[in-house]
Length: 263
Image (tube, rainbow, N blue to C red; front, side, top):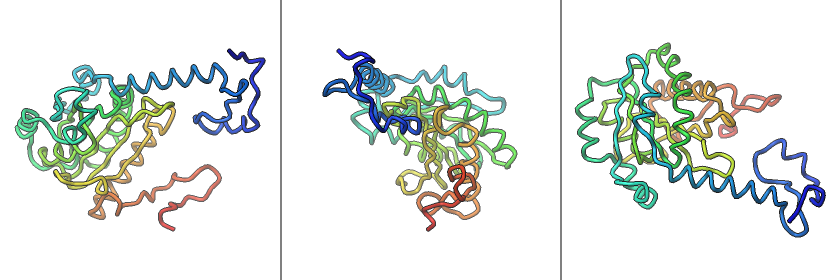
């Protein structure tokens, strides 16, 4: 067993201030220090717990309730969590009762449907969906967006938003979903925006904003990025790989603002 007095420091130790990645841990003999090994095991356990944790949709619905915004709870075609992890295809489609529920709730065509799905980390949406909506909804109202009922989906994958948006007659859909946990980020939420949602679209038709969480991309910044993408998609009539994020604020401090994808 190692102790701090017998850990050989790594010459790259200063780089640890720039990343949460497990680099420059030092060594004790031929092994990593005991503290680093225990930290790794704890992070791995947290990631596994996030993947297997069930979403409390009713509690989340109470947290996300906003005046004037109806909230519906739906299920994918997955009957349970083990099936969800083994059958991604079933997580991309709604169950028959949920299709009937949303079809009955559909009204006239609207601008945007918001979907909150557990994905691979219920923890991520439980912690981040509410503060993100607090940042997003006033921006949407100021920009004139009309909203369909908010839909919470249990055992849902990203593509389930296409079916939800189609059933609710929405011109756009945005899916808030728990991302695959990393060993330093079991609480990371992703945002997926699609124009003209309908069953059968692919990932190439969506735009993604990733790592929305306190230790990653702040909710206010994520809301600004999403509002820019929605506006650009509405103006240009496209989304996905054909739509690039050209908004200001994409560069690091001290570097010119430019999108490297544009050359």
